[in-house]
Image 1 (cartoon, one colour):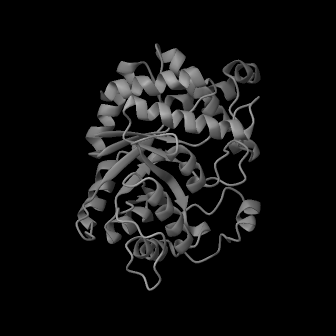
Image 2 (cartoon, one colour):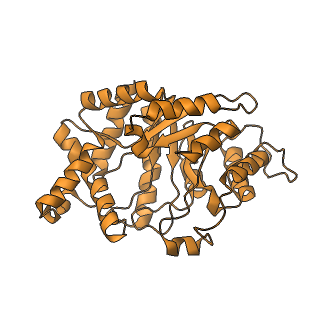
Image 3 (cartoon, one colour):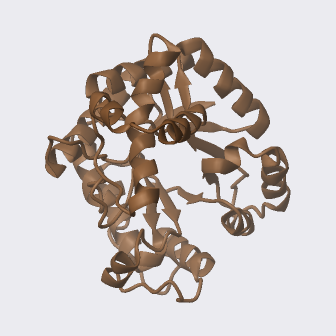
Length: 322
C-alpha cells in the first residue's frame, strides 16, 4: 500500500496565514525526503482555520521546492469552477513538473451560505458533478472540441473524493476514489467498496483503485499522541457549536477552556475516533483498515499546533511503511 500525505494549510494562533502556506511547502519538502509517494493540498474558501483556497497556486510553489514526489489536490471542488479552467491550471502544472501532477476533485459547495454566494454557487443549483468530471477529463485527454493548453505528453491522473453518490459516479466513469471520514469506521465499508469495484466501468486501461484518507498522529505514548490530536478535534468541536472553524490552538490553552465535565467527555469521545497513538497502536489500526478496505494507498492527513511534533509524527508514520 502506497503512503501519501495531505496537508490542509491549517492556520495557527500566533502565526500569519502566509506562514501556514510556507509551513505546507516545508512539510512537502520533508515528505519527499521521508519517502512519501504523493503530497496533496486542499481547497477551502473563507475559513479562518485554513489558508489554502487555490491548490494550483500552492502546488506550483511546492513543485519548485521538490524534485520527484507526486503533487496533487485533495481536492479541487469542481462545482466551484469551470472544467476548462481547471484543466488549463493542471496542464500548466504538468508542463512545469512532468509526470508528477495529479488532480483530485470533490463536490463540496462551500462551508457557509455567504461563502457559497461569494463563489456564485447556490445550494439549489443542479448537480452536474458527473458531467463536469467527464468534461474535465475530455479537456485533459485532448478529446474535447476545444484544446486546453499547454499540450503535454504526460497524462494528469484524475481521482474522485467520494462517498455515497460520488462512488457511483467514479465507478461509472472508471476513475479511482479517495474515501475518508465516518465511512471508514462503518461496518459496511467492505460492502460499499465491493460495490464500487463491481460497478466499475473501465476507461481505457483504468482499474478500480481505492485510497483511504484519515488523520494519523504518532507520538512516543498514546497520551502524548492524543494531545497532538486535541487542537484539530477542539477546532472541529468549536465549529459545530459556533459555526466558526478557527486556527489551531496550543494544547495548554485548550485545556484551560475545558471547564465542564460534559464538554471534556465530548472531546475525549472525539479523540477516541482519531488514529492517534504510539507506533504499535497506529500500526494495528492501519493494518485493520487496510484489511477491511483493500486499499491501494493511505493518504495521511493529520495536523496539530506543534509543528516539530507534527514533523516527528510524519517521520514515524513513514517509518511504519519503510
